[in-house]
Image 1 (cartoon, one colour):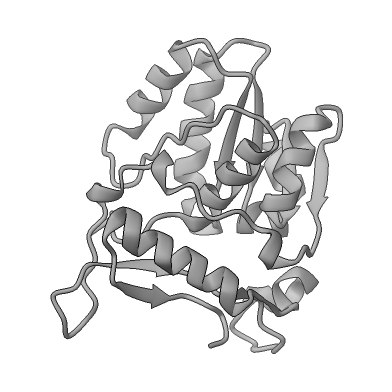
Image 2 (cartoon, rainbow, N blue to C red):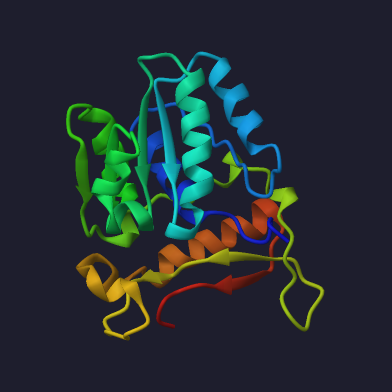
Length: 215
């Protein structure tokens, strides 16, 4: 099932861009067989200054196809930015593929700065306090289209992250190569409870799957 968990990174970045005063929409192509056509249709609206992408490395072939379709359809003035794990590990590869800007590390900090600095090809998001994160902009996607039930129960659940980073150097993990992924950052209990209470009160979730690197 493709629509199991929402992309928290995109929703955090969307919320950060909104907070900076930008209009944001998320084109959620997860599980869509017609994702190329959907991407082209969005660009034909002709009202976009910037198109943003996020990807881990296994997703890059699909993201590249969507990017090429959107770039060919969009206004020549439209700028395309990519962030996420693959961009953080391989910024030069992303530039070679034709992206205008690459955001490394924390997109909540880096994405708003990229929009304000169109001439900078590579920007690095800082290791900011996670209590300064806005709540994810869940309204930017169709929450009702995501389906996950907590194992052993019939309770609909959603993915959350209470902290990021892992200080260890396991050989199988590419994250050991970047300080950003090794630096452990945690949210306060108050910040976490605000998110859980909001998800319960606004969307009815009473179960949560925690996807921290270290619990």
